[in-house]
Image 1 (cartoon, rainbow, N blue to C red):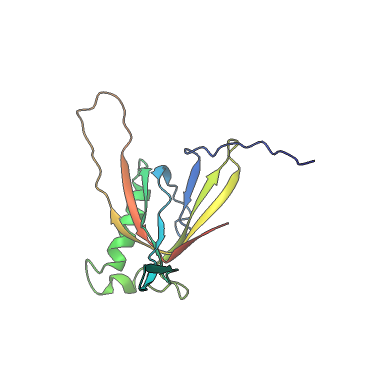
Image 2 (image 1 turned 45 degrees about the horizontal axis):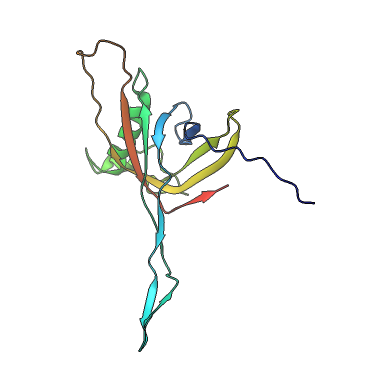
Length: 166
C-alpha cells in the first residue's frame, strides 16, 4: 500500500536575505526572483539532421532583490560602501581599506543566502550564491508629496559564480 503525502505549496512571500558580513544589518526583502539557469547545447551536423549534445558551461542570471530601506539607511549604505570600495571610486586605496575583503574571498565577494520559509516561518530551503558581487544599487524616491506613509525601497543586483540549494 502506498502512502500519500499531503502537499503544501510554497508561499512566495516568506523568505530572508542574509549577507554574512553585515551581521547587524537587516534586509527586509520585498521581492526577489530565483535566477535562471541555462546551458547552451553543443551540436554536430550529420548528412540527415543536426545532432544535439549536452553543453559544457552552465550560465546563471544575476540575482536581484528589492528591500525596504531602514530609517537610518544602514542597509542601503552597506551595499553602497561595498560597491564604492571594490569599484575604486574615490582612490586606489579604497579597496586596500575595504573591511569586507578576506583571504578566502579577496575581491570583495561574499556568499549570500536566501532562506525560504514555510507557512510557520521555519526554513525550508537555503539558496547560497557563491562569490556574489554587487553590480547595481538602485536609486530611491523620497517625496514630500505623498499623503500617507510609504516606505522607501531600493534594489540591488548581484553576479555570482553559481548557487547551491540545501
